Length: 197
Image 1 (cartoon, rainbow, N blue to C red):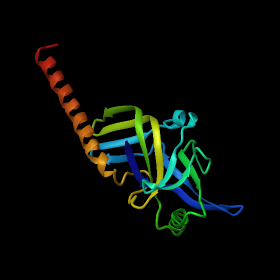
Image 2 (image 1 turned 90 degrees about the vertical axis):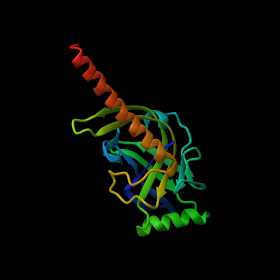
Image 3 (image 1 turned 30 degrees about the horizontal axis):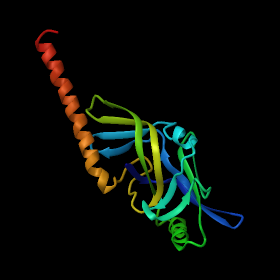
Image 4 (image 1 turned 90 degrees about the horizontal axis):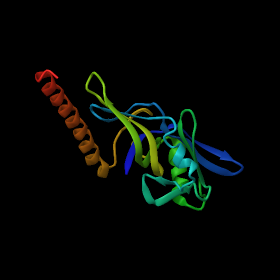
């Protein structure tokens, strides 16, 4: 499972008819996420559309903690949708759940403004630019496991601050494999040039 942690765009609290909500964008399309030095990732508009249309349950967790469930799309206490900006979400606060009430208070006061989402990549494009920077563009996410307000975003809405510890090594391995693939292509091109092909 991949995870991205970023500053939540337009994260806000809302009250309506005595009910309270946390709302904002969990992903922004076209924004550059710096996964690693030399590795930039973007998410393409439509990346979540197919999975969301399938109606599968997505949980809203607090800090990726599966013991603290703030809401669920399956029972209607949370909703997620794509628009032209990104993946927007809303979760209704359970007033009988002290963890949810505390989460609302932390966001309301501005102590927490980050978010993260856990997912698998179904399809992506990848390339190297002229400066040697590796680019990936996620074009489809499947599945989207969860979205989470989280404590440590540290960067702007268009940056990655961290990955989950368990996926950090996977990210390094993927980047190194891409670098090796690029080196191998260069070697093959040089062999062909030397042979006059």
